[in-house]
Length: 505
Image 1 (cartoon, rainbow, N blue to C red):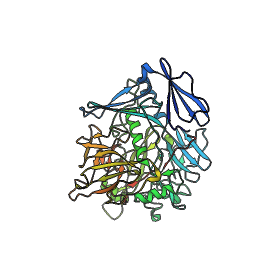
Image 2: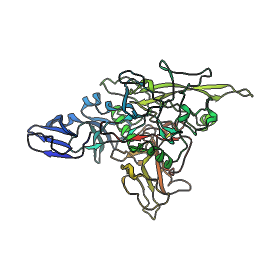
Image 3: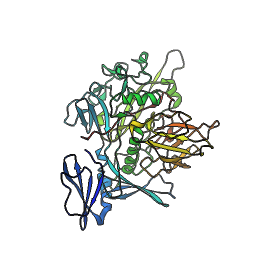
Image 4: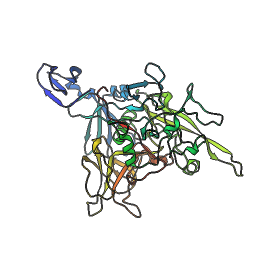
């Protein structure tokens, strides 16, 4: 589907098949018709009653003087129930022969119920994030984020990359990024061997995650089926590009767009609030997704040195639904006091938002489309966040370069001190602009920078989201880390493969 430009008409006739591609507004006496040209034909997308424009968008209002974590629903209240944008999110398999939409309630089958190989043997798992239109209204009193499936006047098209539904790994044979699920199911339960360890597919070693240590195979610390971590940004970018011309690691914008869609759906900035699948008395979603993946940091260190401990796509059997899936980690903790170990298992509840698994409190998400310049006093003394939407221009800046890379646009001025986030940028990126909030106030999550450290550092830094499983209340949708260099690699830092939308989307 191609949508290049917007054209405004006052005539009563719609555009013709020979008109250039774009979106057309036909203004009549009391209504506006929206016509869109899709390659070689014209379609009437909607008819909008100009007197009731609020019926065609929905969103949230954050009052600036109020530190509540609960914004207010604004716009069409019916749309808050119907959720037309959010309902366009779904998992699919990108195969050499085309995209295969996976089952709405089970990602191990296609939408017709046929079994699908999601083990990497026939393509990568991805999550379709639908195009939508956004208008941000920022006043002295409040900020509103308004979204619509329609190209309303004054609204900006938000077209983000499709993103892996879970953290990604490497294809160790073809030396490129991959998003796969190596688990095997026994009915709706993960199949396990006599020791209780998950049984994985025959090709799992090809996609071994963590630090790709084969000597851990067959143990509780196995990297089979796990996300790949402990890798630097430059290597991630190259491995993603190696998948194909449309592939990249531009996960930051997609992640933040999903966060906004979640905020609007749940009307709550605290994703760690207790999960509640029941609609409220008005028919709206409520609560959060809990903190079921929270673990003790010392126990995690002793278990596997901070590497991933949840196999990718354990939520396969709930498909595109939002919910929690219980997963048992075998031999998590040794409680024995003598020579013979006594192992204790641990149960975690893995969250998925409309097919987007582990949106918070697990491992950090390295995004390549954002870069932060923490300036020295001589350079201006500001911390500036930049975004690059052109994947061909994404680079890894040198640590101390004094210029902005080509293709990078300024999107926010960030705080110079760590703290709970109090305000965010009034745009799709929602990057921290001030601190002073709390775990249960405003945006609920934490921001890190290097400029207020005992030995402050300056220059160019990567941007990483989510927060790890031992960070507790710090680790929600907005949690942002801007104190890691691009070359920094660690056991609980991972990535998600992304792909540009195809014309047939």
